[in-house]
Image (tube, rainbow, N blue to C red):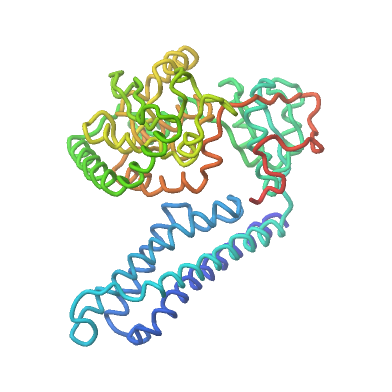
Length: 473
């Protein structure tokens, strides 16, 4: 029965994806076809335009996450689909305007009917919102949340993982919480559909993973250094002996050239396009308290080289102590709260990229004080200095201000081990999603939650700050 439901869910997802894309396609060409009747005729021009929409749409949806019902909440799906669709519309509409530059239509280039483009985008977003919420409703109506167990080593570790799981109430229902060394741990796994392993010692974690694999349980476990290494490794055979081969990586000469040229292009274009925003920020900061506009701070980049990063000042000058921001931090100015919320305070780092201190995509440049502290706790933290510090990156996009140092480290190392030019461009496009989840990505360090192993059913607990009650926002 469970297998049939899984097959049915896959079929439903496929049908909904097809229906959504067909709707977006139909809205664009249906509305623009009124002004351009040739779109309804079979011709090479029509074919090229439609293929552009389809290929670009599929590629951008892949970049932003696409129609991932069942694995994402509805709001992130709306964000990702809307971004991909708007970019696809803009490029295809520009192509339509170029193709209409001819003797029969326009004797010179005209950016045609922008009001129709706006109408198309509005209608498409309404369709996306409907399909996102309706799709998740149908998906989760087919099967109740998976019964989960959480296996960990301490109350502190539980406080790190349980709030994250409980944000996805429609996917997972925490049924049992247990220590990894409890004699009943294997019985608990057998009673569960999905197993979460978090901060379990290496040997015991390997044993539990093997047992979950043997009993065909869905499994989540946090990354350790060995897992990052395996991501950058590949399977080989020496004679008849199966081995894992890891080769120490560094950027090739071609990659260095392309990356630097990309840095120059993005920084120059970015400075030109954002100059009005940066001017407005400078004026707002001056009017707020009359202090300095920019703030310089020493950071670490490749091979441990120290440089000064430029940012818009977001804290009171008298209280600009070099320590991480905490929840309700009174050092932050009124203007600073807005700048930090939308990450606008980091725009001056385009200057760092232009002069070569930073790159567009790379590990987050950490404060010297934090690097020293984190390296004491996590010696592997220095591994991330194998690549130049970046304005954006996997940790900056997927993480938050209060993401744990270990999780940031894993994201940075995953980026380094899986580096490619395509990955850089993909992350550049994904950076815009940071602005759409501004309230989440800028969460500051707050209080820690502790969970008791002896009280493993906490279903009546009030949601923690920032934890959503309905599981589908």
